[in-house]
Length: 139
Image (cartoon, rainbow, N blue to C red; front, side, top):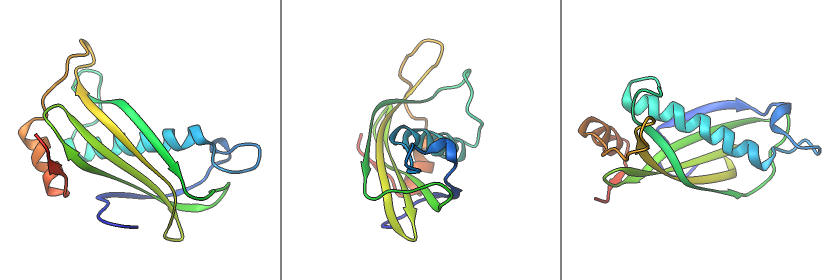
């Protein structure tokens, strides 16, 4: 588990997250990372996510598979903001079993208004929270 991961959670792999072979399905990783993204956003803003407030929208996401994880296994999930710009941030995710990465991911998230789709600048308190967790301001 390299570096700092401000949000970490224990997780037990559910059958609904697995494929026919009992391994975590590739699509399930993205759902798990989505859950971490929302939890991290709520921790950074101090507010529950809501369709009436600006929130993160994924513009791009990728996953790198390092080794299989399977049904019933205990894993640790992590998320961190690596860097941010005026209206966007880079969010990293990871799943470890016994301290070794099973899957890592990265998303470019844009903060938008849900009702208009308009990009929203990261507000000062949000920028400060990201900086406090070790993120780098790129713009």
